[in-house]
Image (cartoon, rainbow, N blue to C red; front, side, top):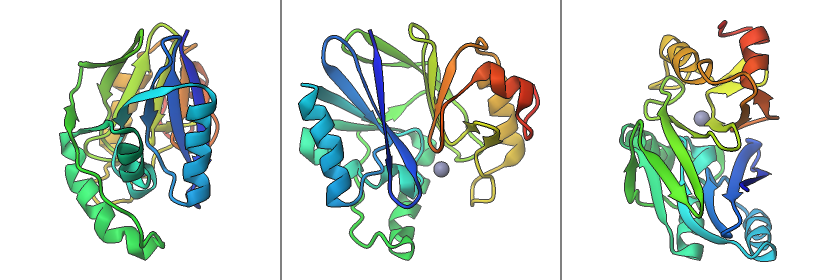
Length: 213
Ligand SMILES: [Zn+2]
């Protein structure tokens, strides 16, 4: 059975996820840990649960989602997966990091490009990769059909949606991604977002004020 553990890191209150199953293999998604205390919180959880991280995944490369990439790669000797269209965003994050107070931010190299329709596997678990641009040009979401959830990044929030006032963001593109890639999932699927609390597809289809079903 797959399990999901979330951490909330940095002043951005970014949600970092560790997914793992009975095999004890794990993937780390969007590590936003920056301080030593945050890094320790993540590694303590991995150790206490006897987990073996095997892949590092990014939904997109905004600074708050990639702060811990280099640390995680080095600590566990694992490779980074990102959609090719978000490489410019990753490069921009490095330039902007000091302005946001992250002078020690270290950029990690991308090892593999995530592709729409392909899957990412670890242990006994399969994650479907969905391409959901709009908030970021190479944004992806990870869908698990067995446990019926989406690791959604900054696409669809509880009662909100990802910001589109960034460079390379576009509202119409985001709305299209939500309607075609999220709202087409069954209502009971849980969405684990990059910020704030989880929601469900059904709840947002019914009441999201920004993108109607
Ligand atoms: Zn973002």
